[in-house]
Structures are given as C-alpha cells and as structure tokens.
Length: 273
Ligand SMILES: [Zn+2]
Image 1 (cartoon, rainbow, N blue to C red):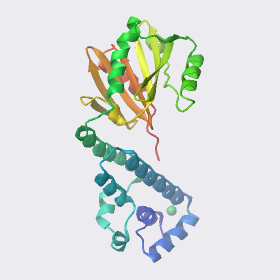
Image 2: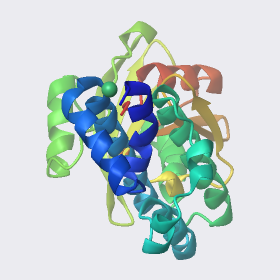
Image 3: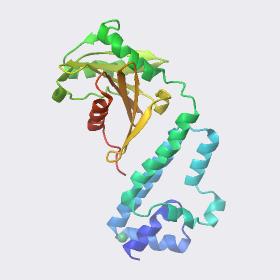
Image 4: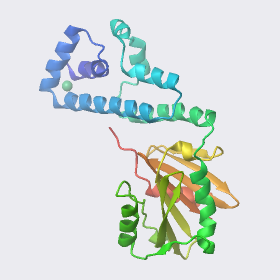
C-alpha cells in the first residue's frame, strides 16, 4: 500500500468504516510507516477534539445527539459507509483543523443567537466595574509585582486557573493591582493596568460564549484560529476570547480597533492537532 492510498483510508479507519480487508492492509502499512502513523494519531486527536467540543457546547439535546451520533457511527451506518461524507471532508490534513474550527463556529454562532444568554452578566459587569475601579468606588489590592499579584489571584481560586497576564509595557501600561469578584458563584480574577495609555483591565474567569452580551460581534483571526468577541457600553470597550474553558475579557476606553489588535497579539493560538 502506498502512503497516498493509506492517507485516504485513515479517516475511515478512525471512523471505523473499513472492511476487514482494508483495515488489515492499512494496519500493516501503519506498522511500517512513521508518516502515516503520525497522520493517524493526528486524526484520532482531531476526532477527540471535535467530540469534546461538541460535548462542551451548550446545544439543544437533539442537536448534540446529532453531532455525536455523526461521530459514533451506529451499526446501521457502519454497514453502509458514507462515501459522500469522505468527499465533503477535505482530505488534506493540513486544511482540516481550520475547517473544523470554521465548522464549530458555524455550529456555535446560531446557537448563541437562538439561546438567550442568561449568564451575560459577567461581561456587562466587566464593562461597568471598569469605571468603578478607576473612580475608586470598587476597591482593589495595590500590588505592583506581577508575580505576587498573579500568585495571590491564583490562590484565591485554589489554583484552578490563573489570571491571563500580559506584558503591556510597549503601550506604557503595567499592572498596578487586582481583585477577585464573584458573580453567580463564579470567581473573576481582575488585573488593572495603568500608565501613560488609557487604563486597561483584564478579567479572567471560567466560562463560555454564553457569558457574552447578545449584541457582541465576532471577529475570527484566521491565523491563530481564535474567535474574538467585541462589545461596548458608553464608550467602554470589551474584547473577549476563550482559551479552553478560560475566558479573558479586556476592557478599556482604548478605541475598539486598538483593543482588538492588542487581544489578537496576545492571545494564544488554538493548538494544531
Ligand atoms: Zn505511509
């Protein structure tokens, strides 16, 4: 079996759609070929990723069932391998993470709009508290050592997640303090940056896109494969992105374009499979 033939069968192998004969011949090729072996591993990881993403999405039960049943073929489906599915699924591995990412966004977006977000209070709290912190009506702990601040905040959530900390020195901003706030039983780590540019506050918490206000707009960074959501109230701008289960919202009176550019430059890209 040649590598090109093997690569064509890898998806079907992971989907458990091969005949016994096909399976035997690809398995013997995988034992000898490191390249195809690694493609096979990537394929399995990708599948796991989709399954996890699908399971984690706040989707109506029926839709989730649909997504997941597409990933675990039923006995009936296995009898008739769906060739069209393989055609729809771009064969070149290199394109696939981007494809899956786009697919997940497509699946997620209408859901966000359909379901009235009930937990949006955190993102609106972020916008409101920005002003309160700057006016001094919401107290924070002054701490100029980034390390100590990070340590304190991390401890306040028993190490479950760390505040997303950024080096903003090129903008003339440095961390000056922070606080922990609680909304609906969830803790929010708050880090305040001040300096020669308009103050910026970084909010970190465990959440999902459902924590966004309904009028948030989405910007997708195609290179990092990260979605950024922008929203604002009364001249205060917020940019939210997610790294796994950790949500980061940057809030500032900086122009939205600048704030978005900043978030894009600092966000970790979605890992490749
Ligand atoms: Zn090979």
